[in-house]
Length: 263
Image 1: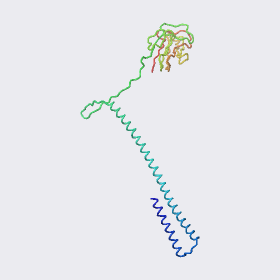
Image 2: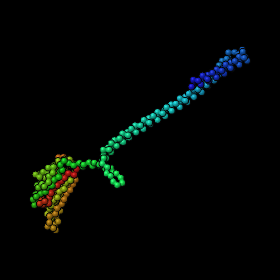
Image 3: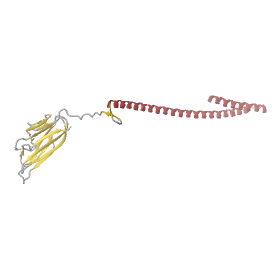
Image 4: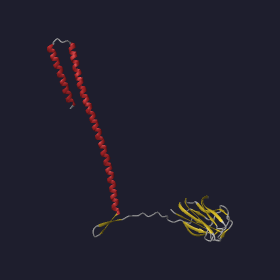
């Protein structure tokens, strides 16, 4: 289409040029070569203007085409992105539908006014250790004598020992499985005495308990300690003396040591 416009403009310019030459030749047949050169220059200038105009139009149309092409490319990319989102959503919906079909019971219960569909809900079982860990021990003798600082208390009577972690020969509980454990211990003293014990994990104090006897009472006083600790398999947990006014602890079930695995 642009080539036709160019040819048309060229014909118009050429006709103007011939017309001017014809008129000039008729009016002044003896025109010299300078006149011919001037007319030729005028013709070339007009043709140059026409070409510039045509080039400007072509450049404008070219820019418009580039702009339209970019818009089309953006639209194509947007459509492709939407198609991908639709495909992903369809895939998710398919999976959900298949899952719902497996969860729904095929049995329908009829009522007077409507039918209800029974949905089976599967509740996962709580994780339970294959074998629980728990122990309970105490000192059976009536009294214990000559207890020194940091001396480990040996609870010689073992009533419960699930997991076989407690050792009655040395009073040490060796952790069979890593986890969170609770430990409790009690201690009894006479009315004129007091005692402080501590629970140690791998030789480091973790907690303590105090029993202080009442001087006005003739009964035995007791104290209790309780801690929760995260321990690893193989750790050593035990009760030891810290300080006392009299190196005597009452046994007979009053002085005990127990523990159990929470999770």
